[in-house]
Image (cartoon, rainbow, N blue to C red):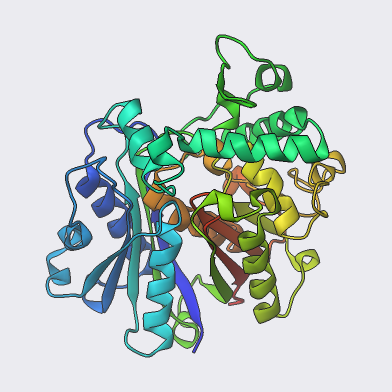
Length: 389
């Protein structure tokens, strides 16, 4: 039994003062159920993707989803956490419930409230998702971890600072067209490629414009089986999914090769019976611009060390053969950690139902979503397909 998305909701991402975690969860859940054109009484199970790590006091938030409607009382609700891939983990749990026959409709929500604490506290909370003995405890934050990956890539394949800047430019241009994005402002190449007071080095060689945003937000989807989905006005089928977890210590891996993500893509392609050439677009986890560059290689667009060619030939640009992060990605749309994986699936669903507005890739029928936890530790790839009416 295959799974499909039949409804989705998405709050704006950004610094959302006055909206706590509960308010974000409730808003996204209500929108998704309304969009699915079902009743809350139809929901058989709930999955919540949420990292927390001390950014809010709500350490037991799964039942906050029940605040969306009294009819959800007594519905089983589970929180899923897999670092920055918590949203994809929640989707995978919901999919397992559908495909095992344990539920007919599952409400999946991803949410994070990050701006209620200081920047230093956010950095510390995220660092707890590293291998603490060798990374976090030594003062290495995630900008530092991905800076180390970029340093190794540059040492092996040459300075790619300009390529990283071009990724930032592309994603900000896309995000400027996304009304849900945290930062809806285009940036030019000079601004992204030049170290300045506005664009300082965060962790060499990564500049401020190479780093994703600290954001609040939530997203939600309603899952059901494909046969039930055919009775709905809009539906997007999950053609295949893959999850791969790698060693947590960066020291045990050649991080430049992104082996976990590459294996996840390969497994998802094989299960779907496709290749990268069959895709019409992709939403990938650009927590840092170097991560998107390595994703080009992991998904098979270019060989290892040659990812920048996907920028050179226009493949990943809007209007290219395989545009990447038409939503603006984490870089511009924002990265409320637990919400990100669900948000990426919402953005893909909009593409596949022709409802993405200015972001629309004409004729999109097959897309990929890559959500990653940690430094390529937890990798989830979903292949999504438009369902014909």
